[in-house]
Length: 241
Image (cartoon, rainbow, N blue to C red; front, top):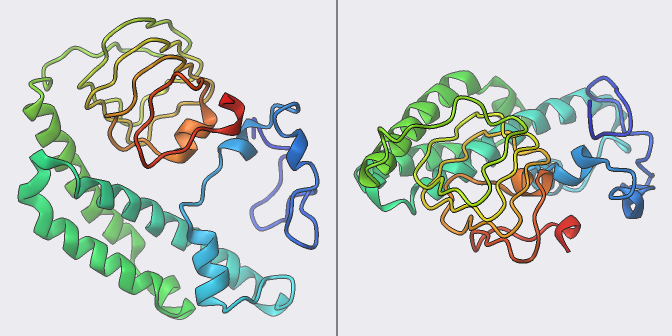
């Protein structure tokens, strides 16, 4: 995959992973342009699996459970990602009417994530994802209506195009390919980034402070600078400094 040291099957450790779980080339990631490594964010799922579910044991010292640990992590990652979006939904004022349903989904998520490996692996994650998707779509719809932007025309193609100095506020960019687009000096008030691919998109001097469903991984994968305005819960990537 682009941005990673090598192509490898799932479950095989990276060739640069040391026995102490540190990266052998961490200081070289920027120079080697390993954007996949820089942009990756597990939403805290890895810590939950190693510290809480397996009580500090890892696939290195429990070889018989290696596949199980990896399978649990993949599910935990998806659940944590969905919880991230649900938690942000709670802060979106136009979606207040959905709060009861959102809280129920969050509570269900937390119960599963704090259960044992057998319960996590047997949980019907696709059925849960469908229910989460329905709520998130409703949240996005309520938000765009509140901003009077439900009929705002969105470009059909963003890939590699320049939108410098444009006001892109209120647009729904969910799942859009924004790869290598130039968004410098753009405004994104209420713009929805749910699942958008931001690899190498340039947000230098852009205002993303009120962007919705923007994740740390998306920010890490993009370009920007210290004049880029980010939501308060996100950090500036080292590549932007």
